[in-house]
Image 1 (tube, rainbow, N blue to C red):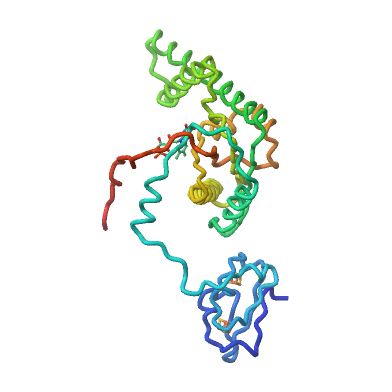
Image 2 (tube, rainbow, N blue to C red):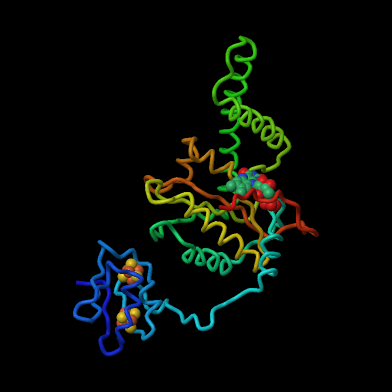
Length: 289
Ligand SMILES: Cc1cc2nc3c(=O)[nH]c(=O)nc-3n(C[C@H](O)[C@H](O)[C@H](O)COP(=O)(O)O)c2cc1C
Ligand code: SF4
Ligand code: SF4
């Protein structure tokens, strides 16, 4: 049974569905036949969205969620570029709760962020509980303190013995740097991981799926930019992502489904600080061919 049906009374045989998806639609005696199943269909929905006569029903998709595009939504280019340039990483948040309805809307927008092969398997852990956030933050600092200590010892040994520096010396130096920085922040009672943000969003997916990192980063970026439209600001938190991959206690505390890994993390809230200017960045090195 095909996952897709064509209403013969509505179909004008234009062939657009077969052009877009030649494995799931074939022309037989000048008539388009649908033969969509798991061998060819990744549930992209393009056939339904392209059909000019509303002739296609996809039985695996919610047909009510196909919304008329009409003329399409468009932004003025420079205005959108300004919006992107005005995004900053925010690390000082008001002690103000984020309404659930905003969170739900922002999570929902991630449905529409693309995924490799349309796997749609990005999941999100939303941490609002301050004790849970603190626990995860503390474990992350513990990880960097341990790793940093190991790195400092390896660097010291290599300096004292005159041996070749370890191959991963640059990484060790970064870890040692974090140990010192995070140690000082901890002593001062400062949350240098999640900045006591009212919301932490942990994007995860199965690591053996297609493009898991890209999928999670595209979702988090989509959410982060959309969040700005309701006055919420974010920062990516790579430190937690690194620690989560290498530190068993974080794994246990997070309790992700088997095979899942963290691939992107955001803190989010209402910022205490307002950036009054955009910032300078290096031009992108480009090779034109
Ligand atoms: C993948 C990624 C990981 C990051 N991890 C952290 C982090 O762990 N902690 C933090 O305070 N900032 C983190 N940042 C924020 C960067 O430091 C910040 O984006 C950069 O300094 C540029 O500032 P801007 O975002 O305001 O343009 C991260 C940014 C990215 C893109
Ligand atoms: S796109 Fe629609 S109208 Fe055109 S051939 Fe396919 S089902 Fe028929
Ligand atoms: S949903 Fe996508 S893959 Fe499936 S039949 Fe339609 S166009 Fe082809």
